[in-house]
Image (tube, rainbow, N blue to C red; front, side, top):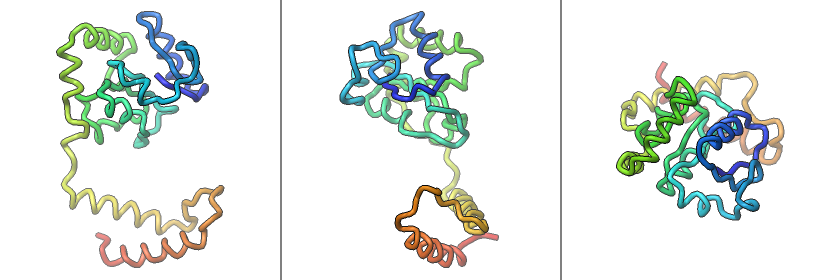
Length: 186
């Protein structure tokens, strides 16, 4: 794993639990045990079968690059975070912490895959993205309804720290609203 956030307690606890069973290399600033921070995360994870790919926190619907980076390097992500991650990513392509009743059960699955070459090869051979996606027209309507609800808010959801280009965003928001007005399903 390569981690820089010392506040992601779930990830740190899992690292410590798994490390009692098998050595886990950590190349980031947190829990580093490889002699210093690695310069290139992608190069570092390249030779590993598994990568701890925990988000900093669990938030439904929020997935970062943490699951994709190991996939790009033909590793198996051990993912924790978005409980809905299986809706976007093929659950046969990664280990989803949320699919197990306990960490012990998850670790037993890791050991099984680690000891069976064919299981690991099968996982990394799976399609990356979920195949049971909604029909595009249904998904499009859903997205447009979400945008409409945001546009109807009295207070626009713009980050308070973002001040540059505010005028541009305001104009852009108005033009998007006009374009969507005729296409929204009521």
